[in-house]
Length: 108
Image (cartoon, rainbow, N blue to C red; front, side, top):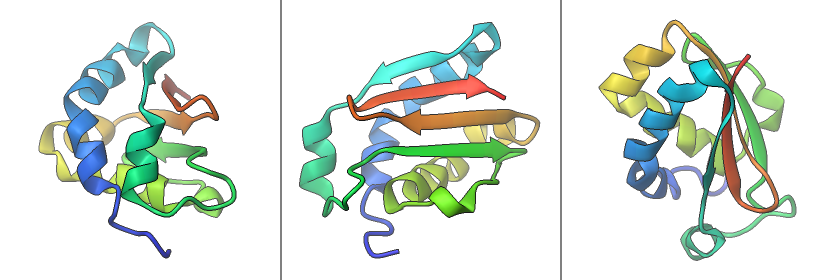
């Protein structure tokens, strides 16, 4: 993975909000608008942009075929945070970013 590690700091910036939204997934899908320019200034954009879908079951990614530097670094940032990592151990969550740079989290 060419840009691995480049996005960890960016994801860590969003962790306080992500943590709150993850807990709210009990009530339904949660969305957070991200700033595309932050991703563009952080790393080289591949042909799919920053779009990804990451499924986490018990805190581990299960869809490795869709693994990008952006999604891998998000997973690293989530698991480096003890509170989030502990919460994820008993959860099945889908995290995705679309073309509009919206982060969506939902229970699966």
